[in-house]
Image (cartoon, rainbow, N blue to C red; front, side):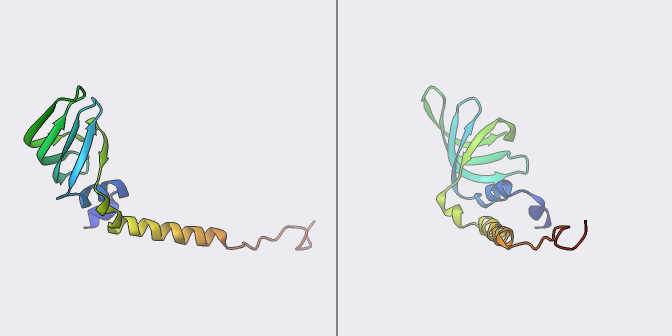
Amino acid sequence: MALAQKLGAPLQLLFEGEGHIITVELKNGDSYRGVLTEAEDTMNCQLKEVTLTNREGRVQRLEHVFLRGGTIKFIVLPDILKQAPILKRISQIRESKSKSSNKPTSVKSARSSGKK
């Protein structure tokens, strides 16, 4: 788990999506929808029970696919991942930063301290 803490939030969220149905669009316009069975640090993804919709709109059913991370344009994850622990931690960090930035800071100018 120590490695997962070093990864960024998008990759951690992708790993949380394993076992869920996702949609992946590639840079060439093809769209894959299926169950994410495995994701890697390089965003390589393995899906099963896949529906492929190519850029012309033709649909195919595939049992398994491996998608190379470098060819991925974007990934649509299920709404249930809005409750993922990584997103809750990010919200807590943002709240604490906004609270600390709203605190008044005591800055003394040279004039108020008597220096010229």
